[in-house]
Image (tube, rainbow over all chains, first blue to last red; front, side, top):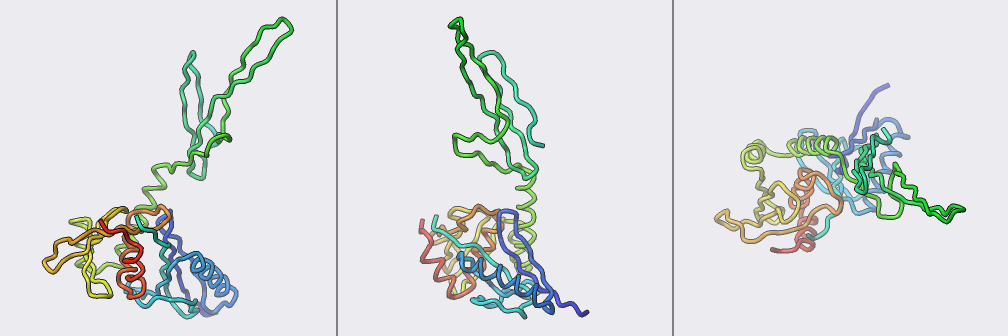
Length: 78
Length: 166
């Protein structure tokens, strides 16, 4: 079976947590979508990024075809 | 390892901390119970409870090793998103300079509080901006959050609205 891996890095207290999934497996895509939507609902901002680390646009909704995403935590004024 | 050691010396007591497998330090605490005997003598029993103290806010401190590992992981991730010049600046000066979506230039210094400076045309700081992740994350994650927010038009506006100006 062909494998097309996507990854989502979520910044957190451990440095970051990476979730990877095979874009060709619907159940893995759905699990990633649930995590994405849960974090965005908590105020995280999601960005599509390229493999070479170039920042692309902000993502408001989950894109199952995105190869890599970065989710940054909500901020507060200090 | 649930508990390492606890010791009492005379009236005073030596507090020691133990480390759980999850990296949380727990502190034993001294508890005293008194019992009246048939002769009317009150005897005191002092004992150590080896666990989280239930009557005060739980003390949870990160052990150094996981925190250092987190900082290293965050730094490595930050480096992935920097240009070669930004990497060099970060390595030598512990800050990065970024052009925001609005065209304004910012200097993001290593740190968490008030670590973003809005730069003037001459490259000198005009004022400091303080906005950081609500959660305590490694400094490099804070910098990465600020970097991404400042490079996107919508989140740059949100950052500037949220930040306190110093």
